[in-house]
Image (tube, rainbow, N blue to C red; front, side, top):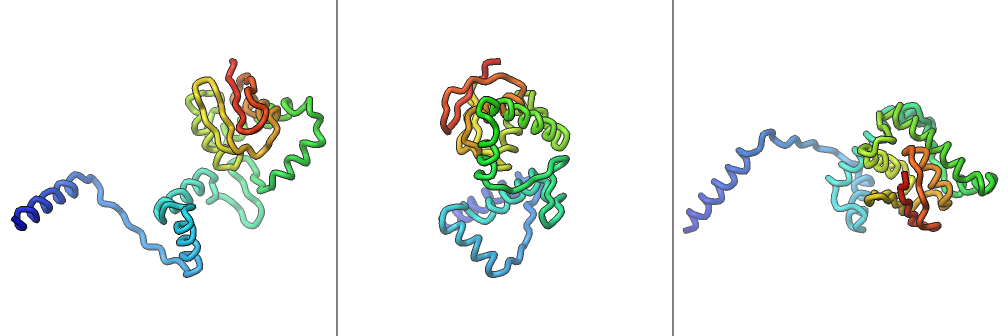
Length: 194
């Protein structure tokens, strides 16, 4: 009976191996102890599910942010756009000096600039609805917030700017549409009316 089980297991294993078209490629990475301890702490704290998903996420960010083209130190470009790491307080302070009645218009101009940058750098046409998931993923990777499309709604969770009027204008300029804000505090919910 034990022999039958081992034969069945072997034949099942053989069918799995033979069904694969390409063998899995493996890469060995030698990490410094400090680097490995850091990765282990992320996993132990539950911030990352494992080393493979962490490396996959890192590569996704590396590719999507075009980090391989960055010039160090302090000069970062993604396609035609210069990238600067700044804190939210910097943006909020700048907004204090723009009259509130101009926030939506300022957002629209920023959205239009983002549209040009995405099209020229990444070939992402933000006015085409089928490309919206890619555009929103890009904004998420860049730290703008978490975005969700629900039928005729765009939801912005954890936005880096807390002014609804700026977001209305930004999304209108970026996507070339008209929105109606349904909430005035985060998470923002915008109804697509065009």
